[in-house]
Amino acid sequence: MHTECKKLVQVLNYIAEKSSGKIQYNKAVSLLYLLDRFYLRTIASFVSGGIWYLTDATLTNSALRDLIKGADTCQEMIEYAKEYLDINYTEIQSRKPFNREECHCFDMEAMTFILEQFNNFTAVDLQEFIAELPEIAGAGRVYQRIKSPVRIATSAILKDSTLDYILLKKFALKNDPFYQPEQVLMEIRKHARV
Image (cartoon, rainbow, N blue to C red; front, side):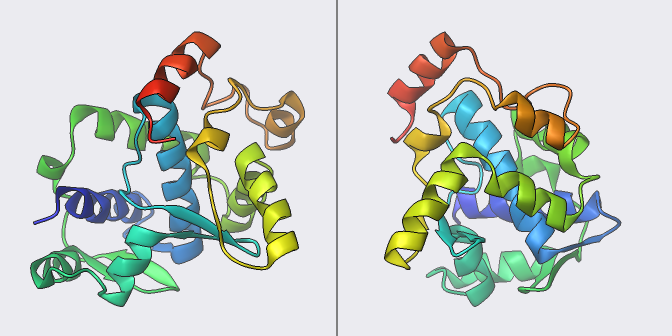
């Protein structure tokens, strides 16, 4: 069974559980993106195992899309997802308690950190915040020119060491939750699939 996909199911399950057992799909996607952004800037990979695309103002994750459509080639994986989640393009609901065995210690720390930072945001606030992230704003400009889905480049996510102060202030964030010193980012860029 695909380890990355099992982890994705459990991450979504954890997010739903921490939101009283169910969460709006759009909010869950936003939180997953922020978690992937944090992972990439910390350990040079995505937790979702997917590729992020921007279509108009909508973020899409390839692994999550495949999970919902049942497009995974492994029927066992589809059944695993159905065992833990009721998932569609409206909401994600937990069916079974979060399975901590699928996640490492860092996964738990990262999920807890991102939820502490962003779970109190509304779905609309999260979408507005994400739209102003440099890599999303850049992808949005490209989308406006070509009117076709734009892949979010990992190099764009890793470009700057900190977010703009005005953006942080606008969303009442005291510190940049994604901050990494330039020396650390240089090392991460070497290991990330850029």
